[in-house]
Length: 125
Image 1 (cartoon, rainbow, N blue to C red):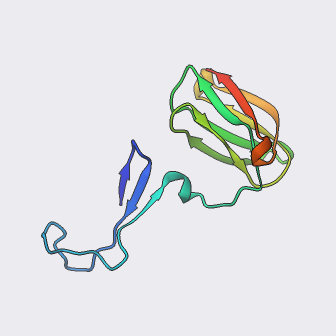
Image 2: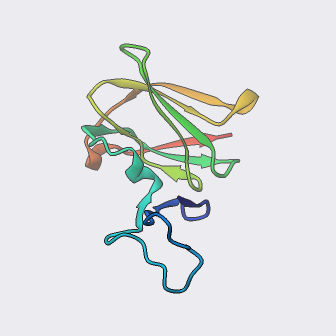
Image 3: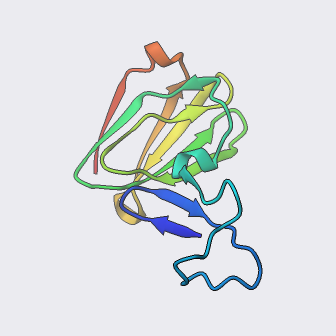
């Protein structure tokens, strides 16, 4: 497996046994390698979206989504850059936590909406 941190691409390799992978003639199994994006690794389909989170004061912050009705943690992700549109898997209200440690911000009561109605949420860290 190879991880490209700058592009957030993950490449999986599958070599036959007893192959010297450094050899110019070495080949992986047919159909390999396979490359996916970091977000492809969590393949659940969105039912709704939260507003696009636009962060100022930090780059690549951690973002956490919590379902308010149950208190259930849905997912956490270190976003790439300063903007990310969180997907969610059912309608309702959510808490969005952005950042780490003492500088973390928490926004409660964020309503899930359709993709076209999601809007923008600005967060200053």
